[in-house]
Length: 199
Image (cartoon, rainbow, N blue to C red; front, side, top):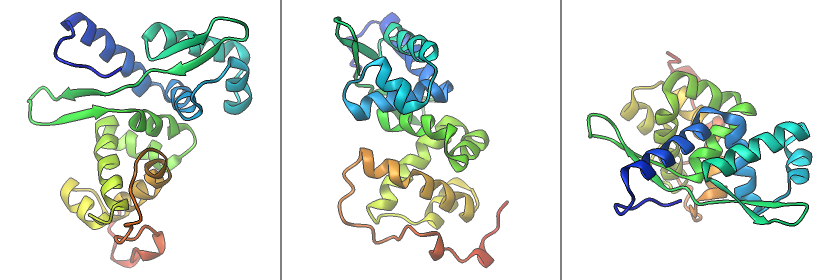
């Protein structure tokens, strides 16, 4: 679902609102991320792998199909569903910051239900803060920044930076080609907790 300047304003707004649902509802985001990882799946697959009630799974799939971020790949029973690509860039009202909404960000939002560190970070810094943290997490895994760099740049505690970077690490390796360069280190054991101010 990549967007270009040839789209009408109404299309872009509709698409943004569709993606906004994913960013506001972790369970929808988790379902989208599951389908994106699997390539395609049936509702039965979703029920079994995401531990959802059948009615809830059908309801969520229908919402995502109506939103245009999931498509039916096979009309025969059982129907199979797949994701449509999301690549939507949003500019803040001041026009000074852009955020790109990708499947990786949607996946990170979906992990709020199962990862307390991601959930806490989003509660404190919002989805835009999570998008920024995801960028730092990719750079960290490439050996380009440290948790202290992120903490200083974003005015968060080094502990908060380390925790979110650790939480996002598996997601980064699933969605990005970070290569073998992990020179910045990634273990909590590398953080000197006596020097960390958790404010």
